[in-house]
Length: 498
Image: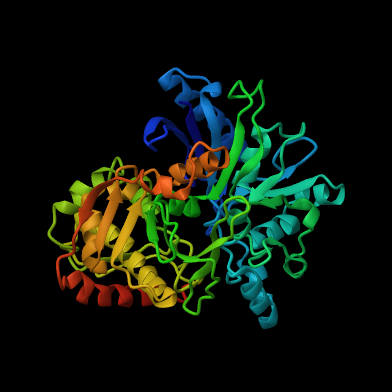
């Protein structure tokens, strides 16, 4: 039987993972790309580097198992969602670096919006008018990058999230590449009507974006196009699944029923709960978003709580402070002390996301004494991941009306047993990790496979999940009571900094 490939373009790296019919990983290759930090609150990526890395990891994964592209039944794409790129449709070249979802340079333009405009943005898109999302990044490029404005003037400008960039290149680029995105990625731009699933004229006018510069919106599971016979795969393979990374993780975790929830631990943390075909509009700082849409089936929606910096805090300890040599070292270092020594670390490097939505916040480490060591900082970083997750998960339970009895988790940090035990204690909820933690890529593979009949239904997909580990909470842990109170106090110290 043929295999399924998934191109997973993340914030810090790009991976190509090959799965078999049982949803097991056959091969994987991965490459990190540069984080370009030019100014405070700015984060950029080189889109050509990402495209080059994508080709390399595809070739690397195929080579590891000695197969060719023709051995793949289909390919799915999943991606960092709000990150946006402007490129020239005639030359195929980027007009500027991609502006990453963490980037907050659009803040000033958003502050100029009237209250009625902000209300319209929230109602139509399901999202608050925050710099996290793509529209203000597009607007900034038009106003501040002369090459982007010039391309708009001569009708050669196109915008896209990273799924669109990869799809376009894989299917021919400037020579007839498919210019499309899926509903989950479109729902993160502030430009799509969340009910009608189409670009909204009022939102486009608010942000001064031309509809002609945007890709067509399609479902999450259908054949968008085929790879080139003379391209990286060496064969014409259907690209038949696209999902934003967090929605892909929902699919990979088998969260197909209303009330199903998961939390992905990556560069940031993202918790979602499936609200079925119902659009639930948040009153507590959560995001109303599309969960997935498979072909002509009804759209499924979700509520989401987003945390900007979790795994990125570990990277910061490694790369900027050089307290550890590799991310894996943080667990043993944190285990070497029994507690955080009174230290709380709020990694609000570019503000706070849900449920606060405070772009004026900045990071803080509080409670320092002469007795504090790097081990205490390491433990405080892991606790920060868990405290931030608790904030959004509690809000999700309130908004959705679903009591959280168990949390499905995925992402790299879930390999850290100490962090997962801390999460169980802080949340006072059982934590469950599947055998395959690369659920983002798996979800993209599932979406692609469903479209071409590789898998028959979501019911079949649910049978593929195997639980690898569980963590039960220490009942009435102080981390969940006194610790959380101190965390909230620490958060208050980060506000109104900018």
